Length: 420
Image (tube, rainbow, N blue to C red; front, top):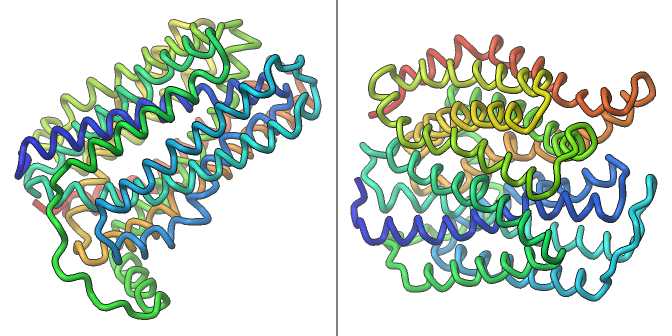
């Protein structure tokens, strides 16, 4: 599969470390915010700070990625994230012990603001890092095996981001609130060390710089002229918005309705990741057997059923099963859609097209996070809080089914043309 197996394995190892850090942060940021306030909207602001940079910096990240040697960009962003997590840990340690969180406002507004700013910096570095990483993979993997490579990459991402990371984050939070951030700082700096020793094929002569408006317009014209890429950008944007709606609701639902501890909730997230790991093992084979078009259609539909199950389950086991189903079918969707994009876009403009694509798709994440908190607040005006906490799940379920119905034919036609 890889053009250089050693390079691919080390690249996967570095990705695994950074994704383990992301997984620790997935739980740590939201749980820490809930230790400073019980206001759902304020709690949502912390993950919003992590995702807002996808809206603000996606386009600059694409322009920079197409103008520089991508290995240097990867290194700079990993170091930046490591330092920002170290600063966040120091801020938390300085303010311990924390006061009891109020129902409205934050118990320590200065700490809350400092952590939100650290989250913004980390999110910005993630935008540049991830944009560069997706443009590097096709240079170290044979194009005919991109589905298998992306499936393995996504599996490593899930193991770190959803299996090991949350469980480790929950354990570290139980020991001391700053520890998840200390471990994250170390993970990113070690990943940078691995990347520094990695031999990534250098790009050919980088084209002479033109006005950024011209380069951006070139990427936009390419994306606009490719109907399947347009559909994927819009569909994925709507899907990410709906998925992020459940993030804050899931934490509060687990705490207040299911009465799960941080450790138990971390184990639920880890158990849910098993579905994605299984998906990573079988994704390439399913695409070869049933075609990318059919795998993408069925995956989108089944993600809707996974969301619906969240409304019905009453305990940690049921919650784990729901997340397992979502992880399995979500990974299948990602494998097919990312492979299509990597094949369809020329390397010289891959950064710009990826950035425009992600502006449409990932840029909707902070919107979904904000809507999650708002939907709970609005629902509380009508129903008891324990029922209001389910509002994001209901909206996300209906939304995914609607998106799938509207995009079904286009997905089938588009992925049936998946390049080989």
